[in-house]
Length: 539
Ligand SMILES: *[C@@H]1O[C@H](CO)[C@@H](O)[C@H](O)[C@H]1NC(C)=O
Ligand SMILES: *[C@@H]1O[C@H](CO)[C@@H](O)[C@H](O)[C@H]1NC(C)=O
Ligand SMILES: *[C@@H]1O[C@H](CO)[C@@H](O)[C@H](O)[C@H]1NC(C)=O
Ligand SMILES: *[C@@H]1O[C@H](CO)[C@@H](O)[C@H](O)[C@H]1NC(C)=O
Ligand SMILES: *[C@@H]1O[C@H](CO)[C@@H](O)[C@H](O)[C@H]1NC(C)=O
Ligand SMILES: *[C@@H]1O[C@H](CO)[C@@H](O)[C@H](O)[C@H]1NC(C)=O
Ligand SMILES: *[C@@H]1O[C@H](CO)[C@@H](O)[C@H](O)[C@H]1NC(C)=O
Ligand SMILES: *[C@@H]1O[C@H](CO)[C@@H](O)[C@H](O)[C@H]1NC(C)=O
Ligand SMILES: *[C@@H]1O[C@H](CO)[C@@H](O)[C@H](O)[C@H]1NC(C)=O
Image (cartoon, rainbow, N blue to C red; front, side, top):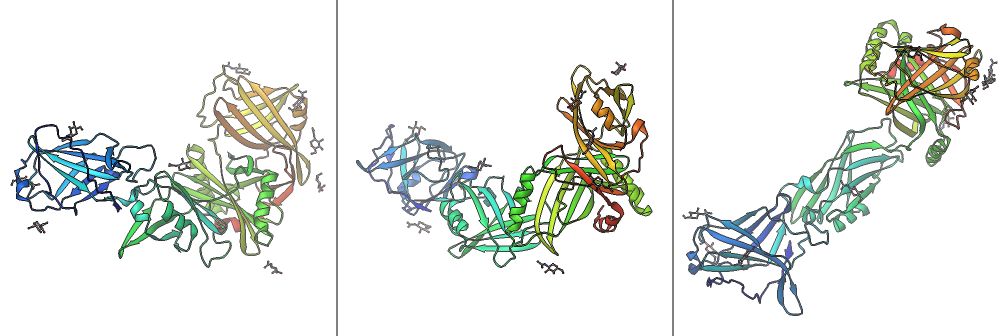
């Protein structure tokens, strides 16, 4: 509600020979402005002046807004009047003038709903008569409280606080100024915040058009790790309560996303690949990011002695979770393999069905969650979404031909056709078997070629040739224009593919401070982890 200056000395500009009729309406006449539906309503308070009954049904209405020049006390309209016509006017029975399509001009102050005017003059006139209504009081009213903020309203959860980012439309200034509390429910847990919270005081005081608020709140009485979450994404709802003159109003907030804030770019080129009924995940953490995570966890005053790597694969509404239960200091695990053939026999079919579904799908979401525990307490979480590109080749292996190293690319449901006139880049990283328990990564080989969709492609590099002479594990990243294909495969010399060579293992890596030069320091029996994995698995 805002008081406007009574305007007293309007120099009449009624340039027809019309007659002005005074005091048709009292000073109790009020204007209500609904900016979101661009409607101005003049709630007329009739003074029951019989002289005013002279107006015909068809009248024109001019709405003039402007500001008072205090030096001269002569109102100086900032804008030309808005003109409207209505056809069913009657002095005795018209109690409200509804002006559709009305909006305040942008006066350059960016204040939107702020009625940056000092008076509002309504002129009702016919060809012969005019009456003027000076508005003393103007209210901005929102017909829909859902428009108090712009739609993008992300919520982020951090260990012990939440942050709501909101941009004000400015449309709810009157309501928000009497803000009473914020209520938010995150995965079934309800939290309430009252006006003792400074960010809410700030919102109530400074709410205005296009103003950005980052509201950071720590729930009272919850553990310092309240939001250290097992999941990357959450369900949350929230609303504001405003209280004015005993009237309580609820303003629902529409969160655009609710996420746990993880360290960005934690892994170097992570991906999921499918090969021979196995889900293979490659996640090489970047040292600086690991350090950053450690610092965050150190703030809890504890160190982790247990961890879970959790991969969730979702496609077409179905999802499956793969858990690896690691032990202390195994953050540098870099490759995980989960094989359907290692499942108990009654689950293998179901697993393969899911595998085939993923293989065929274009829309696969893979999340990787690193969960760090101090005994039973979760003290850190890192959630990432990692890419999966539909598998281009069902089976891949090396074969040597004279001085050439060739890759067989066995297509099954090949979808993409390479354009041989465009360059294709094959980037191959190889780990060679060192002894019974270790593989060592020897580097990355990059070849550019005009690949023509044949099932064999050959390269010449004596180092590469040496590496594929014995057991190897390889990752292949093929880029062709904007398309990228990932593949993870393994084998021995001349295509003697030991399909099940790795199915019973998880490969552990340590010290991978550089993206591609890391070493794989041995194996951990996969079977040991299988029990835990089955427990956690969901379909
Ligand atoms: C009403 O406003 C229009 C312009 O929008 C103007 O031409 C007209 O003269 C005004 N009428 C009165 C009575 O002020
Ligand atoms: C005008 O008449 C109405 C209805 O008779 C009445 O409610 C109102 O108080 C009157 N207004 C004034 C200013 O006398
Ligand atoms: C007022 O009354 C007149 C005459 O009875 C009628 O034509 C007009 O539609 C009425 N206006 C409203 C707003 O009810
Ligand atoms: C909200 O405000 C921020 C900061 O001013 C701006 O970057 C962002 O684009 C705004 N978003 C919307 C939806 O207006
Ligand atoms: C973790 O568990 C061990 C063994 O039960 C216990 O000695 C240790 O105090 C626990 N650490 C914390 C931080 O609770
Ligand atoms: C295998 O090689 C790795 C790396 O050189 C070494 O650390 C490990 O002890 C070796 N294991 C055996 C069983 O020789
Ligand atoms: C590959 O790396 C290992 C150690 O990581 C080394 O022993 C071996 O000689 C290397 N092989 C080649 C062909 O470079
Ligand atoms: C083989 O590839 C490696 C890695 O790209 C490169 O350093 C080396 O010079 C190449 N060797 C030959 C003989 O081309
Ligand atoms: C595709 O390339 C391979 C190897 O470069 C070659 O042997 C083959 O003839 C080519 N096929 C076609 C259809 O051009």
